[in-house]
Picture 1: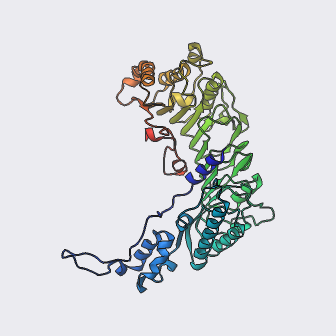
Picture 2: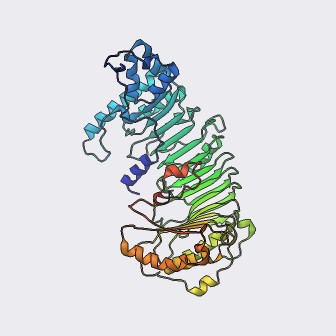
Picture 3: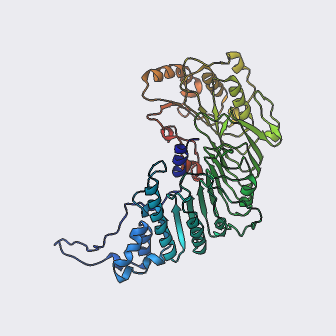
Length: 506
């Protein structure tokens, strides 16, 4: 993964910040009247609680300056929980690619001094702190001191990024002193060894979200953090390859975790060992997939409802002790996950083996109601390299979810190949309760491609199920690049029922 891609992912997955850099509060509080007069300061007459809410929505410089407006405002900033984004403290910081090291060093020193001043002068508590614009490899002493101040003053939500590069900068051990944390986002660090450190629920008793972005971490250190976080609900491993960052094996044992994401990430193994409350497992790689294989093992996850994208080319699916292989038609009940209601799969329909793996995967999830299938080779038209004949599709053994549960199908990046059409015919012919099928074309601007696709889909649209008013076949097209992209924010938001919907389908 290139440096530019890593930086884009680091900042795209940062938690939303409630303050914009352009927010300000004017010292002129006069209110106009119909006659053009007026001078009464009505804002300062508001109750303290409302004034503190105003202060908390200002960039930190503007918030601190409110103390100079009038005696009424003097103590409000210090009595308002701190909201700090270091981006608001410096108007310009060169990109890490800039050649002027002296300028970068000067800007870094100014920013470090400004952050240190804010953290030292505010008594706390610290509600939300984003420190993500600093090349902290240059000022590592400051990172240690900041974490101690953050711990002492009760930081609740922290995003702490070593603005790339390099990767091997060690995260100070004082991160384990921040027992007040509710959410933690770490970017581009080497996670400290947990050997000999306290292990138990008192370390991170309130932590609910943990996001580790391109952070070097050993498997046993991840297990240690999970054991220290009894209230953790969201765990995300972001931009981790398992080679240069992130644990090569992620084994999830947690009584509280509800959502696990591997975002733009691959590991050698992801195992749901004991996750009784897990509802959502999101596996997101780039659109082309990864040449590396990853073992996805589902042990105990009785509440797992949303799963995807399982990749037929690179994911080795293991349920219990059973490895699911291409062509499996009789799945042992112990190798089924009946709790999954929404399943997303990524498949290259040009490869016959992947199509067979797709069918085998479907047999493992007998209660799926919504199925997303992303075709990853939609640019090539004119048939598959290895098309399956009509005899194959007629002889496909029963698939329980298709025949008795499937209500909605979304086939994204439809290319019009024979295997895609065979798959659609299979589903349309067997799905007894299907209510809606959405076929998404890759490019709304390609009129010839759309006409060709519509011609191939026309026979399906005239099928008996599709003529019913409550069972429409919907054909969409991406109107712009990125229309199909679904976001990290949607994927990690447990209130979003279907995180796999791209812009074209929302």
